[in-house]
Structure formats: C-alpha cells, structure tokens
Image 1 (cartoon, helix red, strand yellow):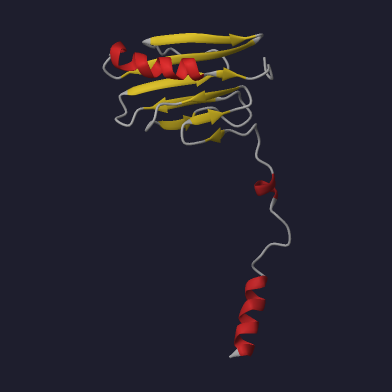
Image 2 (spheres, one colour; image 1 turned 90 degrees about the vertical axis):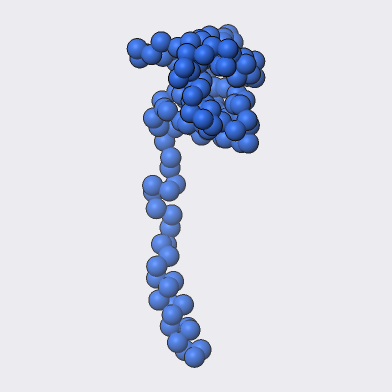
Amino acid sequence: MRFTLAVLLFLLAACVPAQVPPQLSFTPGPPITITENTVETAQFTVRYPRGWRVVKLSIAGAPPWLAFISDDDTLRIEVRAQPFDDDVTPLLEDIAQMDSTHIYLRGMSESDDTDALQPYFDLVRESLDIHEATNQ
C-alpha cells in the first residue's frame, strides 16, 4: 500500500510544471481592483450603485472603460478615461477633470427615463476620485 501511494505521488509530481508558465506571469495592462462597492484603476477610483454589475469594456493595455449595469438591465452608466468615440446618444453625460486628466461619464436608460437614472448617475459622478495624471 505504501509503495503504491509513493508511486502515485511520484507520478502526480510530474504533472506540476517546474516554473510558472509565461501566460500566468504577465498580464498586459494596468490592474483594476473591484471591491464590494468601488472600482479602482490607475486613473480613477469610483463607487458604483449597490447591486449593480461591473463590466470592463476596455481591451488590455487601453485606458479603462467600465460599465455599471443595474440589476434589471434597464440602466447603464459608463466611465471612461478617454472620450467616447461611438454613435451612442446618452441621456446624461459629464466630464470630470483634475489637472490634465479627464474622465468621461455617460448614462443610458432602456426606457429613456432620466428621473430613474439621475440619482445613480449623481452617485457615480460625486464619488469619482481622479488620480494623478498617468495618461494622455
């Protein structure tokens, strides 16, 4: 029994790589930290509404672009570290600035209900903390 266990452990040891594979050692782009109610990037920290989902829309290496989506999927707030360059017409939009760093916000509602969106948009906008200029 001991011999069989020793052989089994020896064979399983061969399955463990001698070193960490390169794809696990390096992840391109700056990190994003998501906690229970905030998101922190290299450019900003922002609070998102309780119960909403956080979706990272930016590709690796690009400035952060986040979407906060309500639990019923009818409201959406996006925060981006560079201007929006698509044809979306938001209900609400704003630009926050600190020194030379600009953070762009926009809010959309499936039913075009600005009254439902406004308090959440204000929460996100008021909680936005722009970090020292690191891009642009």
